[in-house]
Image (tube, rainbow, N blue to C red; front, side, top):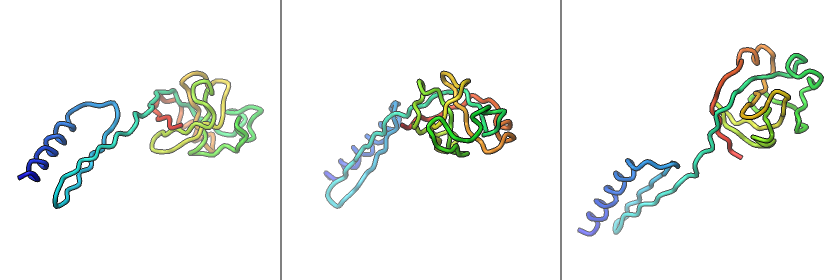
Length: 142
């Protein structure tokens, strides 16, 4: 009888937890043994989501002027699907972000990149033009 009561309470708690809104996501794991039911809850920290204006650049003279050697403000070679330029007052260099399922690193800066703007590095000018200017959401990791 005691085991059935524990299972009923755990089931009730799980159903209540699923309708209570929270700011962070919650994972609930339930383990049942021969003598007792244990419910364990893990809370993930809230995600840091930003809306930014995103543009694109490549290592050509049109995009980078006299800095068209592909070396970023942080001293590393820019890489497609990895490097972004940022306003370091908003997103410090070295910060990792997620956009469209990919992780990028803030490794560069740019004269026109001020405030909530980022510039995504592409290998070719055609790819950069195709990306254009977009308002996107990014997740700031660190």
